[in-house]
Length: 140
Ligand SMILES: Nc1nc2c(c(=O)[nH]1)N=C([C@H](O)[C@H](O)COP(=O)(O)OP(=O)(O)OP(=O)(O)O)CN2
Ligand SMILES: [Zn+2]
Image (cartoon, rainbow, N blue to C red; front, side):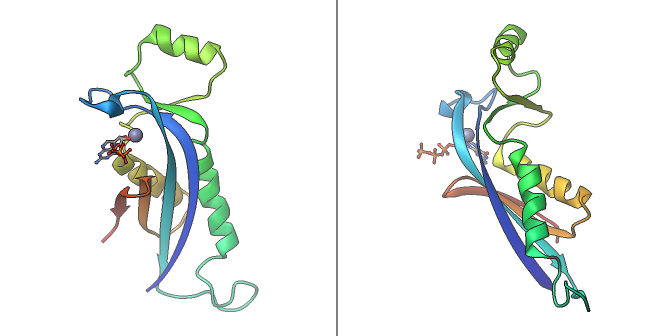
């Protein structure tokens, strides 16, 4: 099996609601997202001869799905008081509501699904919250 890997990073803030500890506070990360796609065969003929997919196309699609979250405050829907949320939004800050707790684990599944929607055979997605903390979602 052939496996290709691409990565892209984004900077954003989040907090973990209902968490006892410092991560319940709004804080930021440079999240690194690694995406692995697979194929049993290679394209034959033409410009893509000998490739699973052009690295350039893979890179662009990873960047598209990842950059959506760049320089934003990511909030699990329903975990911030409406008044607080309304103030932040009306002051012009970029807020993204997600329907999952914004953990590295949930982001790895989220980006896995995003790349699958773009028709990639996704093998594994790894999300680094810090250089030493990461979570992966993969198919066996
Ligand atoms: N399994 C998970 N555990 C935690 C997650 C997560 O996504 N999955 N996330 C957090 C927090 O978001 C937090 O930012 C991580 O903090 P921490 O583990 O403290 O990491 P640091 O490297 O910043 O720790 P320092 O001790 O400050 O260097 C928590 N857990
Ligand atoms: Zn965090």
